[in-house]
Image (cartoon, rainbow, N blue to C red):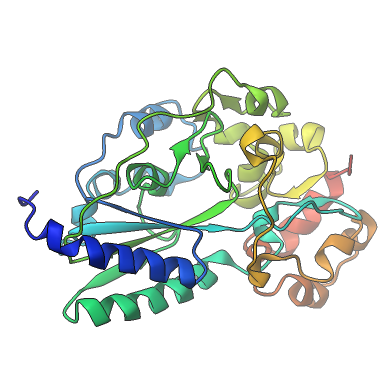
Length: 311
């Protein structure tokens, strides 16, 4: 890493960028360096086969651990978090994870980041940048921890003091060197094991998630035949699963998001299992257009609905 120069002069610019990020709708913004990430946790996870069918997690490991290789001009990584908590939801039938009831967060955050970059260019006209929202080999939770956004909890989620784990993350790699924020050095889960105790499939151990048993993985990423563990223990979750977040004490007092994009579409919460089983492709497209649920696909969603008994 190059020796830092100009940091005292750029504290003001950094704080102006943070203020602009908050004014655009981001809930938190933190700054960190692109130095190499220790990958012990990732390698341990892969050695145990916990990535299940996500073969892409075994690719580009060096890019994940060395952000500079992903974008060589990078001097600073801005970690951005958005509260997406839509409030307590009442489902008429099978449940959909809160992150997926509104608009696709990839698109929403990318638009916000482009606006932020426009502002950064007023401060540094020659700046170069790349934006990432769960779309590249980026260890976003570890970067967010290093940028002071929060800590990685026992449920492997990034947890913030202000918004719990109900946050979307995005990263902006920029070619300007700015002073980093202090990383979160310790977690605040203490002796709590609420998330581990509540997981219906036993997918969670402290700071370790076995995707092969995770309802979120099975309903979103898994390809092929529906695993027996889902058929027996889906607890009414059709797409995603919020159980380990719902029981987390840090999520108990989170305020509802102010972003309308992340509030549920008018028909999503009204769907009953019977309606899902008879759903036409046209109706599927109408209800889930622009939401993360489209990722599951029409056929898979109907197949999941066969086994999804609301509780």
